[in-house]
Image 1 (cartoon, rainbow, N blue to C red):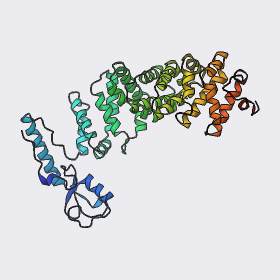
Image 2: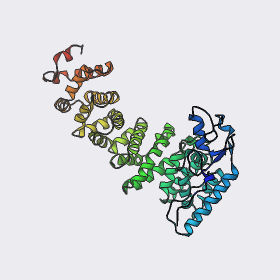
Image 3: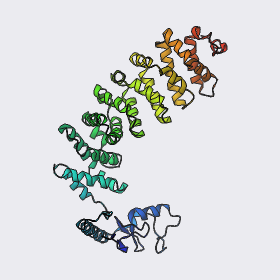
Length: 414
């Protein structure tokens, strides 16, 4: 079957693509709304692209052309049906403007078992189209419907269509609408438990696509949840977070979301201990040894600094043979934020876990030399003072080392 030719009067004069939301300007010319609004915003001279007559910049003077939209919709449906009847394998004609009533019908179909798969696929297609369709979906309550759908899947133990539901929710989450996401996902642990279950299934099965969709949503959920609920997160939650950290095939966005979740929840209640017991410290060190992107390193050091502030965290840190060497090597090589956290880690290790073996290890792997470099480097004065403080802690052990200039240890009163 030959490729269908779109009638000329269905095409926008600006984009030359078939219109989805035709609007007519005061000059009588019809355009796709998105195209003419963009033209009005950016054009130096606000004139009609076709007639060159003056146009008001405000979009309130654009009149929806309902008759043309209905003609386009009818033609599109007829053409698509004809193509399917002939078994055509060419690209289908896109649907015209999405209307709220269409979305509301699809949301209702989600509650009908034999219709929900088709409804989700249609909603996913709409969500991928444009900001305008996503706004329409948000106003029709799609985000709320997706949260309910995902929670129901968790309760029923069913996994079908989860990827589409996660993707739709992600695309419609931040669209301005009447939906209060904080009230929707942050007032109890239901949605967090649902996403944790999804991660448990898909990390184990190495289904990276769903993990990549779930992690940013979980981060947004944690950010919208109050501290009381976050303090009640169970050990399994942190176990799944650490398992995600161990997956080197996940996206950078998913990895960053995982680190942000752990940083957000770390200071609360027993969470820090759970994170340590889940094996996070070793995973973080291994991840940093791979020299990730700058912002990932900053998150890793931020989290390690939190974890090393407790005895259990320091114990796990010192069990890793490369821990002190890794921290030392990254100082003055990533960013000032990383320097701050790295020096904090060396400070708490030196102050609270400074056994003779640890102190000699700091000297052997270059941590002491790096602290001397910090004092001489062009960095913040408070970092220099923190470095001096660490050097003074064990100066009797380190003072005979050729890598330390004696005046750095004696210049300031101990």
